[in-house]
Image (cartoon, rainbow, N blue to C red; front, side, top):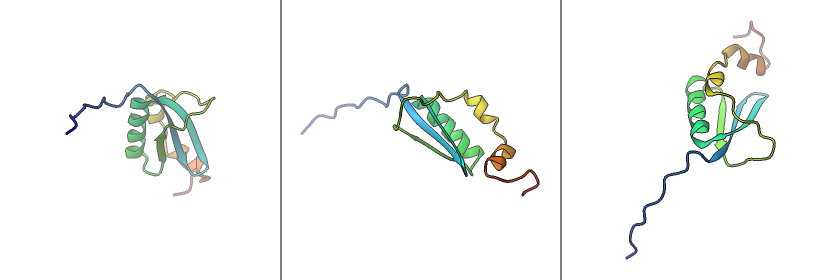
Length: 90
């Protein structure tokens, strides 16, 4: 019988790709795994109309993820405008 070998926890400092999408709006960033997951969870709870994915598809030129506080300030009106709605639309 092979002895159980403890596996190391995932490296939360590892750099990941995070994509935030809403209609025609698509934002791609790089962030450490912990920050990417935290922001993805926050945005999913606060803005269910967003599609947020975190993966390992990094490429040159990806900007760093802005401060998580900044992303928390995204308003519903910004999302509506990104999806082509006017401020009078429901």
